[in-house]
Image 1 (cartoon, helix red, strand yellow):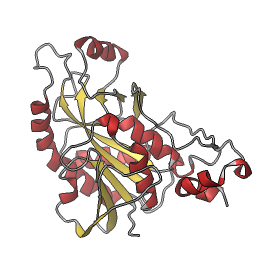
Image 2 (cartoon, rainbow, N blue to C red; image 1 turned 90 degrees about the horizontal axis):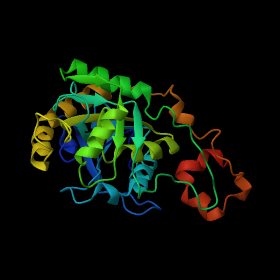
Image 3 (tube, one colour; image 1 turned 90 degrees about the vertical axis):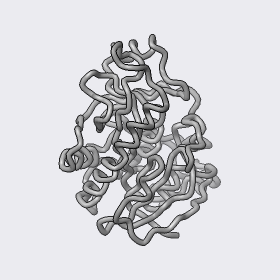
Length: 287
């Protein structure tokens, strides 16, 4: 099977980045079902990348319908060790103006209907998640954004709601009191699974609106989101191109060994079918 070292999860357009060479599409099978779509693999700045539109081409999949486990498992199966997420978010702070880009370093999970772990079925594992974002990768994204001229915000909390509806005004004002920075519907689930898969994860959060809390701005509409997001796509591509060239070949962060002390179930007690199913995730710890 073809392989890649850096994964990009985002919307339409990212797999058409200028300078991408040796492009191929690949359907990846997983024990968790089908990923959101076929992967687009290509070479950029000498690095092999794997692109996946999280909502499928044509934006066909609701946030709660995304097969997050299949998406992250497939990335791991392809050999990906770092994932850059590109996401539209609502701004919860005045200074994060629509059109700005945030590289959050924390998440708050308000989702209700998602499976956000690979484990179960006879194996228990607990990974550390106090620092849910790879600081090394996040710094590279932030600094790359500054270099290409984007208005960047370093750090902050991304609150992840279930959706697909946007917030009520009451919810939006409560979240603001909690001190969060941006709001979205997808990233925390990806981050949890990436940590279990020992993949570095960081987000380029593209602020498209002020949710519905801002008294002098129009309430969020899908038309406004698309308009601002479209303007940011080229900037996101430039950031990724700059970042890919700066990502080290080797990892010195703790993400690479996140499971080392996390697997609670002795190998001899893990069912054989579970060992096979999670071989891509657990393989190095079952030898």
